[in-house]
Length: 313
Image 1 (cartoon, one colour):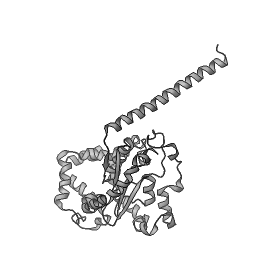
Image 2: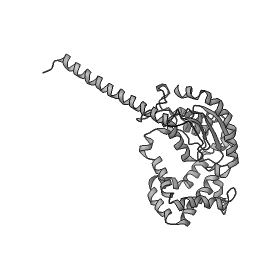
Image 3: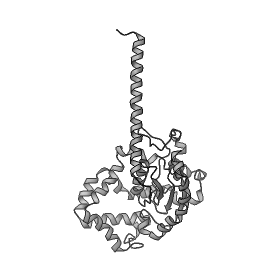
Image 4: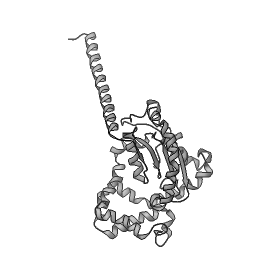
């Protein structure tokens, strides 16, 4: 039978071995990330659609040293704080950046409370017409986003149906172009489809999905985005330090006030406010989007002089 000092010595050795194994795992993970970064050249990203932003943020968090410009034309509203619940913390994030969740600093909470006390919004006069009244937003959300629930929960069912009928596919896709470019289009006889887009351009978009049989796989992206496995990665609440420019269009799905953008993008060089456009700005307003990108290039150039240092801080 072992005496106490011997037991303690054995426990200490076990703890030491466990700590060494954990440290080796961390070193191995860092080596893997460095090897990935060595293989990837520096690049710029200009995501222009809802899931383009999601994918771009994921790429940045995997290759933070490689991304030099992040220009976002449609912004997914970030969660309130830079916290990591159970998932591995991105290597580019320091411990002092991880803060506890505080409902009082949540962008969503500030937007809600801002309808009662406008000073909670940084610039009430600028953002008020796009954020309020919340009743109108939730009415629209209730009546026009049922497709998102279907995509998230039954992607294969709706996907199989759309693969079987070109007419059904066209009706399904064109309905989104009508209501997601401008919510008032729902009151127009033709859904306002040809106000900015030609029927040829719209049908070209439909035919891409039809001829490639890709509508089901595109819908599955919604389902995977809403999955627990993806949420556990905590990509949405990790900060982005690459130089970033954001353009906010009038009829976006979820309008993001400036303070919520700064929560997510730590090196924000520009925020544009555009009085037109919805979920598909490059399709609706290609010249406006192109000009906004070009006007951001000098700002990116200045920011990139210090981008390497900022990513390591």
